[in-house]
Image 1: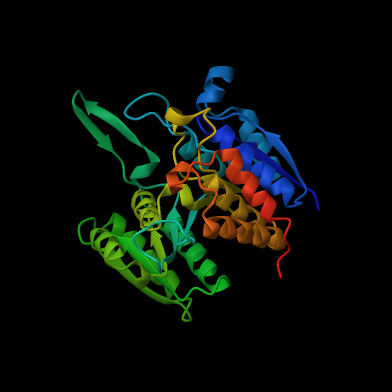
Image 2: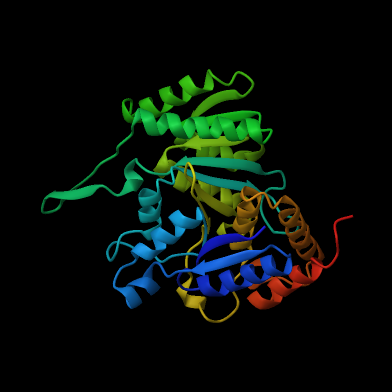
Length: 337
């Protein structure tokens, strides 16, 4: 079956890691027709906007996209294109699996977490304005409908993927109305899934407990801002943002993305690690029903990591982006026994 997929290579190192991943998927024999579009800083330079209408039209038409890292200026400049995509396409669920990969240096060996983050509202939506000079007001919007929708997504995912426990993360002891509504919505949904254990944690205590013993948790359910922070913390438990995947999911549209930055300081040098985007592409393949190809690529990646001969600089080696991708592709020639 041929899949038509929108490709957003991204900014900085994005085009390099995207090319590496596209090559691996092609070597695995997955039949994909790519529609490549520009977004972010590259689109602003060429089209005068960071999110051209053709990008949204392509994703809506194809229902699936693979996205490299996009630049988001700090403290000024244009607004986040990632947030813009999520809002425009109603990609309400951010999914971040975090697991320990072989021979990737980290503080923990037993980590297997899934972070589910509400993706459309809360402080992270960026609704803010200046009341008077020197006074900024940021709006934290929490709704029952969005909170219920993301909670149901988490419990359905848990049931479909053999997960036993969902932990809601909040600050309802202080923000009793907003975070209280999120927690109450999660509790109401949890009552519909008696086969899944449900509990909750205050966000600051959750961060401490994750650092002490991440193996104590299974799935985490969070509002938007806490979800962004805690998912990055969890990535740090297994080696960093360069070794974890991400997906933004709606009712019928899915955008799979590298969750790290665009790293302009190393752009064009062919030294970036393509693993994060590759792992996101494997989530995409499973979403498309290409389980066998995803299994073969994952096995090839694990073999390359376990051998330790070909590693990019962030993993302690000296391999280029191309060399790392080629090593994975070479292992694809060996079928799963």
